[in-house]
Length: 402
Ligand code: PLP
Image (cartoon, rainbow, N blue to C red; front, side, top):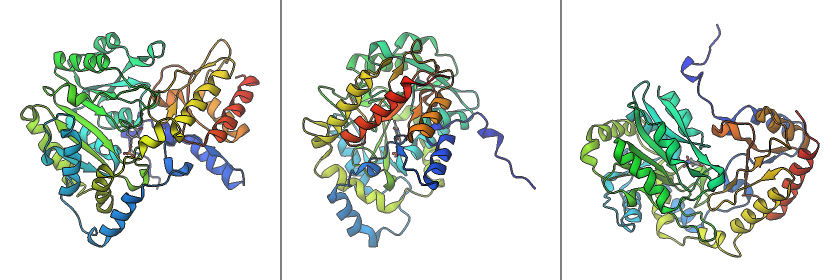
C-alpha cells in the first residue's frame, strides 16, 4: 500500500522550508556547520524574549491549561483592540481573533472567503504563504508586480490591470517581506482606492509594522480606509522575538455589516480549531503593554539597524549585485545582474551555494518572483557574521556559472 499526497497539494509551493532544507540538514548531520539565513526566526540569532513576556507567561501558566474562547482570551483581545484604537480605529474585542501565529489566521481568512477559481491579488515578490494558502483553498493567486526601480513599491497600474470579476481581495504586505519596502501613504491609499472601486476585501499583513529603519513611517491600511472591510494581521513573532510561541492576531475593521456572513464563516473556522495555544495568548497583553524594546534595536546604536546597514552595504559591494535599501522588516532582497551572473535556475544556485559555502538563503522564485535573478538573505545575524557571510557569497558568485 502506498500513500500519496493529496492532489490538492500539487500546485502548492512553499520554498522557505523547502527541499534545500533537507540538504542543509544532511550537511549538518555530516558534521558541517550551516549558516541558516532562510527563516526569519530571531531566536536563532541570539535575540532574547523580552523579560516581561516570559514573566507573565510563567505566572499565568498554571491557569492556562484549558481551552479558551475560540477567538481568544478577553484580556489579550482587549490589549489588541486598544492598540488599534490608538490609531483612531473603531475596534472592539469582538473584532479581534487570536491565532497560532499570523500563519494560521491567514489560512483561515482566505479559506473563509474564496470559492474555487476566485482570485486574490498578491504581491510579487510575496511572503509565499499567501500564495500557497490561496492555491490550497482552490483559489488563484494573481501576482501584481512590485517595482524594484521604485523602491519595490507596488505597481498600481499592473495591479488594476489584473483585477477581474473573480477578484475577491487584495493582499498588502507592509513593511514587506522579502523586499524590506515600507510603503508611503500615497501607495497604500492607491491600493485602497482600487479596493474601493472594485469592491475588494483588504488583507493587510502588517507583522513588521514596528520594525522600521531611518525615517520610515508605517501607514496602517485599516486606519486609512475606515470605509473598507480590512483584515489586519500582526503578532508577536518578529517585534517581540517570540516566533516559537505562535501568537498572532487579526483585527477586522470597516463596515462589518457588509461582511456578516463572511465573519460567521471565519468564526466557525476559529471554533473548528478550538482555540489558539493558551499560554501564548497570555503573552499578548504583557507584550503590548510593556516596554517596546524593538525601538532600541531599530534606532541608531541598535543591533537590527546596524545589521541592516552592513547587509545593504556589503551586498552592493559585490560586482553585479544591487540591493534596494530595506526600510523595514528583517530581510534584504538583492538582484543578481543577469548580464554578469548567468543564473537560469535559482534553486540550483541556492543549492550550490549551500553545498560549497554552507550558507543557506532562499531563491527569489521561492517568493513568486518571476525571474531567477534574486535571493533573500536575513539581516538577523550579528554584523560581523553577516559581513563574513556576504563576503563568502560574493566570492562564490565570482566563480559561479550555470
Ligand atoms: N507574514 C509575513 C509577511 C511573514 O514574514 C511571516 C513570517 O515570516 C508571517 C506572516 C508569519 O508569522 P507568524 O510567525 O505569526 O505565523
